[in-house]
Length: 279
Image (tube, rainbow, N blue to C red; front, top):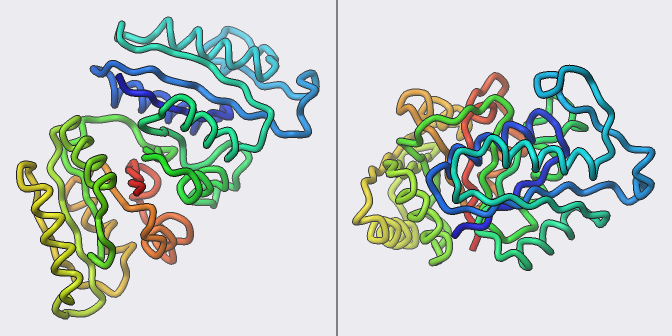
């Protein structure tokens, strides 16, 4: 059985992440933990209310966070089509990252699934503060679901890498587990600003990765482009990529691709889910 942790602030992006998680693990035996963390200064719940979407209820009703969480749980149980799906709600009044770490450890969480940003983020932000902190501070594989992502069968997962880091067993085991779960092709993508030979270290890491994937369908691509973001965006479109896998340790890639992309009008971060791999 898999244990999946889904933080929610009841925003549309969070709802979309929940929907994606249910579809992605639709045939699996899974326990889902729905976690809402109230701000420290919102301990008095009477001062903090959320509204149930009109699409769900005939009229707007104000709910306390704890009541809203109960409603979400009841809604998920009612509409889940898999008898092997189990749902639990958690409401915490501690710091967000503290809550995430606590339940990842206590519940032996296999994956975190969350949206790119919550209700309080600026529309121009690519990724919200909470999601960014989870990526960098919580040692657990994460599926990051953009606001415009909708579930479809995952057939191609691109894995951008510069081959400069050693791929530890946990990284590769998680990656191959997702490949097995989806039956997807792994597209290993190396992007360089200019044509140049790989160093001895890069070749060693590339060979190790390919050896680990030898029983999985995979291809290796070498692309020369001045800009990493546009290269990946073009590759995603031309190769019909359904998911982007990245190693959390490779902060340079994350800075360029998710946290602070330098190119506007890229589409991958608005509709393509990210699989974040941790050591």
